[in-house]
Image 1 (cartoon, rainbow, N blue to C red):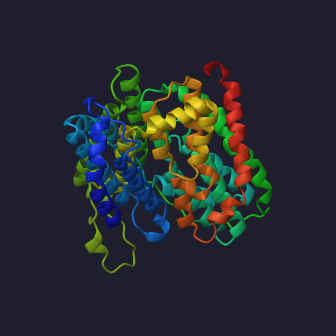
Image 2 (image 1 turned 90 degrees about the horizontal axis):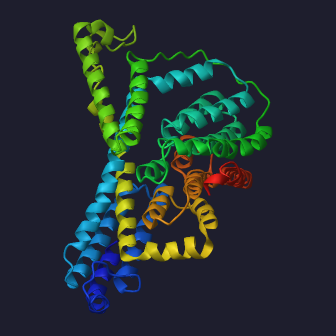
Length: 478
């Protein structure tokens, strides 16, 4: 990073005169794609993203390099525009990108808060213990965890869903590496596929919806293609699952008081967000923040009821714990701000860095060039299929944000296609989605990059089948 900063500082004075000539007419937009500053900005972004990709090995949080890269890129843009006598164009462009980020960040923050609240109320632990107690066979559990991942991820995010289902797989078949490996692959594919047909299932679908490219109800035209994407590889991997029955467990986890009502409030929050956008033509984030108010009021109700009846809210220590009396009533029954604090802040800040970096490169003119090559020369369908393949290597967030920033003139069918491919393309490799990366850490040594890569041809078959099914079923939208 020091090397790049030094290089940028040394090359900037050389680049500015040339740019000044290019922008001598003081237009409000300069093409920086062929100038040194543009090349430096590209280099900064590439270097930062290489650090993101290497996060598993460097243990450097992915948000840090992209946040610094965003600052460098916009500083370079501002210096160039100031040199050309255009003082406020860069500021206005940066504010526009910040507004887009703020809407998405607040939306995601509310969703994460609800997920954390349900986790604290032991909703997911109760579901896991129920599945473990049932004593299903490995093959039954393979399909059950897959379908649950597919249907939970449209409401919860695919990362949380994948981690929950992986916990079930490890609890039941932790010693059976063959089962755990294939079941984890199935969970990643199912969670990513399930998130592709709902605006709440993945950040990419949320971006497409909030940008107004696709209506809320239109996303559900991707249900069958997404299901095909999951079922095709699962049907083939089914035969690799051992025909055995693991030992059942007697673990029982009860949901805490208020858990079911929090689930209801979360569903009501989703309805509020959709209604604000569909009927009132307001940003969905206003509906989500209103829904956060529901949770805050309910948390206040829980707190008051616990003050009136402390016995119901006391922390339950072990009976043989000598310090049991000291621990009684030690924990706060429910605090909504602690749920906000537990949000994935690294992901939210990484999202900020990506939005600002890609927005800056787009302002320089690079996305216009890319759009010309992909969507004009290649055509929309090949370009959108390529977006999915690219998202298996590069995180789908910057890929989709780049497409939205390019804003190519496409039909609704094509916007659904790129939503589908960006959502499920990450399943091709274990590092292509947050779900895959998280499960490699959770099932370390049992689910690996190479074990996933062995099944990539089968997953690619499902990827191709989902595209063909979408183009067949939704042909009228193209």
